[in-house]
Amino acid sequence: LNLHDNERIPHRFLLIKCKVEGGAGNSCVNKVISLFLDNKLQSQLSADCDSRKFKFLLDLGAENRRCEIRLEYCNAKLELCINYEQKQSAYSIQPLIIIAKDEHEDIDKEKVTKYREIIDMNLLLIQSVYAEKLNERSMGRLCFHLRDKCLVFNSRLTKEEIWKLNENELWSSIAKELLLSEWGNQSNVKFVAFISCSKYLGNEVLKSQNFSYENIRKHMLGHVACGTGGLALFSSSYFYAWPNEFTNILESFNDKRKIDLGKQPDDSNYRKTYGGVYASSLGAVCHEIGHIFDLGHDLEGVMGSNFDYINHVFVVHKTTEHLPRRVVMEIKSQGNPVAKQRFTQLKKTPAEGFLNSYREQKENDSFYFSANSAIILSHHPWLKCDEDDLIDNNDFLVDFSKDDCIIRSHKYPIKLIEIRTNSNSLITHWFELQKTKEEQAVLQYDVSKYRKQLENECHLFVMSIKGHSKKIWL
Image (cartoon, rainbow, N blue to C red; front, side, top):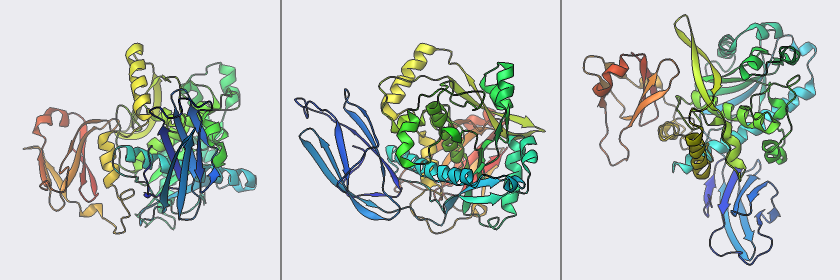
């Protein structure tokens, strides 16, 4: 069981995972577990009765409270209590729906209301994913604080202007508008925003008979999936597969309906189902939110090629799902890295890939934060435990000497160093310093062993023990 008695839960949606072991229920006919929240039977259940693995998703509600949980399996019973205390922090995430300047003329108010419901509910789901995955890393249930429900942000761009911009241009334009808004001077607020007027030219795709992911992307206007700095920006293109009600979450992950590519874009990593689109697009949001929390790219896990598997977090799978491996790339424009475009390539060693998938899905749902990413998140101001004191990254004075290859901090001890490639922020090496409070604080670190790599299109990411962060471009 991934829960203990009197545990504090800071997020509204709670995933409960359990496995029945030993001889309990061997003589039982109906080998299904029941879970009661405050004596009310819960229905959001995913189960594999043969392996006796069960997952429940609970909505603890809008108000803080002490909750009673009871699990019943055949003749066995387990009772425990949890303390539901929602995350409060001076650092927050504000969800937004972006409305074009001329969209008000023909806007469907019911559509906007539904989009706002979709955004609010699914960000609560991602909040619980961060907490669950960091808890698996023994970091505790750390999560971000949602400042308010989804708000409407009126852009100065028209629909046509939005449709003409590429991913990087669209992100830059919306980011500039936010800086000029009432929130522009609030450095403790980050934004997760969705473009309302995203458009898919499905008929053109049908005419071409080219159903590759790359061609589908070419026929999507106002499409973006990019997170950096204080903004993670997305299109609403895949909302057709996203639920807006809590009771439909597991059903949506399991939705086997085939996509009509003449009407709906596909980003399912070739699963070609509604459930696949929901999993891959929600996983992509989780991934890009990681970037606004200063995470780089890993080869595997949430920040690598495994974000498609977010459905495995909530759904018990009887068989191994082996998807094509994603490659995250950055295209350079005039010497500067711009918005990421994702392409998919098949793994070169299918047998080895299948075995790796089997191990990952058995051990961690194939959806996990690497050790270095978990360290960053656990020290990050937006996630660490109820931090009210604002920190200023300008106060984190760090420099790197190319002569002796030593990183020096002039005030705060260093917690983590990563060497990242300039082209796609892929982490090639990382070092954790001062692993425990008892260890001596480290103010400088020698990376001369990696001199050749540092001279070849790489930069450094440095985080202090307090959560300050700096990128050092070489």
